[in-house]
Image (tube, protein in one colour):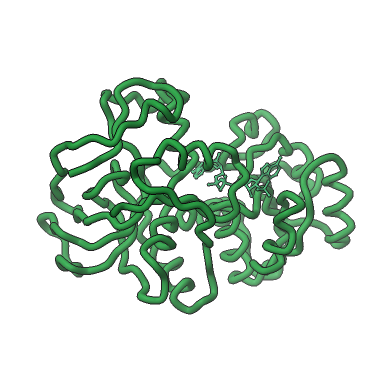
Length: 301
Ligand SMILES: NC(=O)c1ccc[n+]([C@@H]2O[C@H](COP(=O)([O-])OP(=O)(O)OC[C@H]3O[C@@H](n4cnc5c(N)ncnc54)[C@H](OP(=O)(O)O)[C@@H]3O)[C@@H](O)[C@H]2O)c1
């Protein structure tokens, strides 16, 4: 099968599309014929070597974690799914014609493979960070970085909980934030004042998705850094806020919850950039800009 691999750390140019042996589903896993794979920020950071101390890789290595496709192998002990089922989920080395998933759920027929390919990481991360921040109905929550993959999901899950969401993104995404159900504002100087004007009764919690160095401002808004949770600012604990990470967690409950809402038309993660597998490096470069609305996807012929 064809798969994207890299043999040394570096820029997008180290990614190669190679002919390799297909993986097989081990116990508790399924293998899919990949139709599309989601592109996440973690992947270019791993490729660049930024995580080599915490997540050492044996090179050459495959790339990718999220995908959607058709089940073509079912591992021992797996029930409730059969060869031929359309699923989406999370696993390993998903920028490939076949990939093994460790968490999955049926793809709602209402959404495309491309859209579902981008769901797994945003769904799990968004629900986890909202839980970590204690977001519930009746509260007002700020989502910093609200128009990307995780942010778009976080806004919509929080609105589903009955929270009022103030979404922070760039000027060109303000109307998009409104379409997700958020009260929009822009990032940059004056953030605290803008949010206070939009939420005169105060802010109960803040989630920082962008990692743009505004933990102190978000703590000023909530009145307590303990009510600020970041997924991307590892300086947050020094300011009394928390960092949420999801390594090793079972994503299945979050996949099911997101799929339920997507099937009902109550949650959408638009795919705004699509690249063929052979251009995976360009796809990662687009993701690395940190300014793509919704999701970046690679498609598999
Ligand atoms: N800890 C975890 O478990 C975990 C899990 C998944 C992802 N992550 C990390 O979380 C980050 C976000 O992931 P993602 O997939 O949602 O990224 P993304 O799709 O690239 O979205 C980035 C978002 O940040 C906004 N943004 C850019 N500059 C900003 C600024 N200065 N202030 C506020 N917002 C700004 C963008 O808005 P505009 O386009 O409008 O500028 C966009 O909404 C990445 O660093 C990723 O690696 C962590």
